[in-house]
Length: 222
Ligand SMILES: [Zn+2]
Image 1 (cartoon, rainbow, N blue to C red):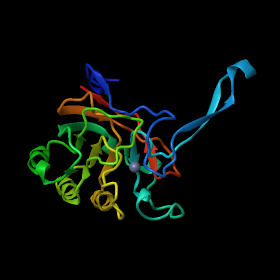
Image 2 (cartoon, protein in one colour; image 1 turned 180 degrees about the vertical axis):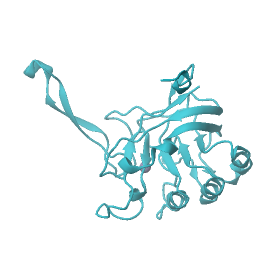
Image 3 (cartoon, rainbow, N blue to C red; image 1 turned 30 degrees about the horizontal axis):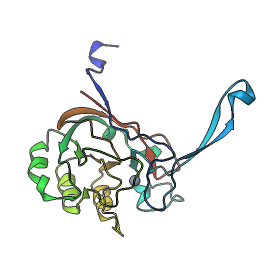
């Protein structure tokens, strides 16, 4: 391997939310829980568990089949067949904390100044996250903002809130605009330890071939 192939960084910043049985999820969604299949004490060999959770608990990426098509249609993209290129590479973090408002045209100029230089952008909207409490009011992307991203060559956008759409959104319009432009989106990130600026992002979805979303271990390299 050549030296040029080495990743160069001095710091890894974990931007994933911890997942426990107390972790909040969308009202009506399935929280994380585990059952113990085998204990070391009983088996004298291993501890073994099984888990139940919605793939939208904690930091995750949605796949297009979350908002359209059906699992029966082999053409609809599931978590395991998302194009990995979007999830790896240069990213710019925009700090607009603290806000519970829509991310709308207030970021237009900043996005336009990043266009052409960056294909990935994360919005830090929170200085503190209470992982165990579902916040009824949170920041989300307006459809205008999603359109600006789509028209200016961005391929990934991430938020530190539970959804790119408003909590009461019925048709998930922002999800659809992002999907229309071929963007992928990350939800429930933890950017509390991150300052505005440029980083390398690694946030790969797991290869779940039958799911509409996947948990991520998301990190920034500085
Ligand atoms: Zn989701």
